Length: 101
Figure 1 (cartoon, rainbow, N blue to C red):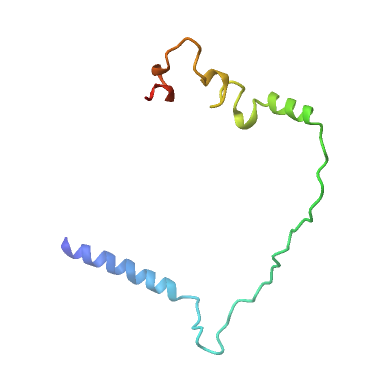
Figure 2 (cartoon, rainbow, N blue to C red):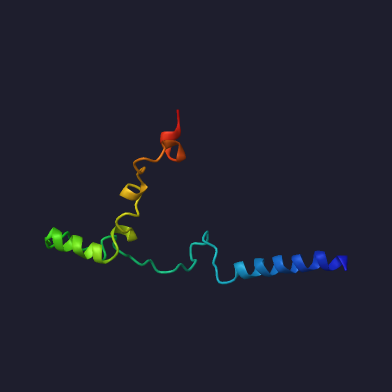
């Protein structure tokens, strides 16, 4: 049983070593075959800058509001909304930074 713990890893490593050596030629040999070089320009697919069409800001705001607000936030849900401010008449010690002295 203990020999299997030594034989199985040895066979796995031997198989990996054989698989790595196949299909590759020695790069130090002057007549070694190399794959052809393929040139691809860095500017392939480049599109020059084009001015965007100006839109009416009111229509843009209406579209954002119809979609549920900016980044999915609806008015009154964000950290700076009216609902997150302390309510008048409530003691400041009930929460928030106003309770620190």
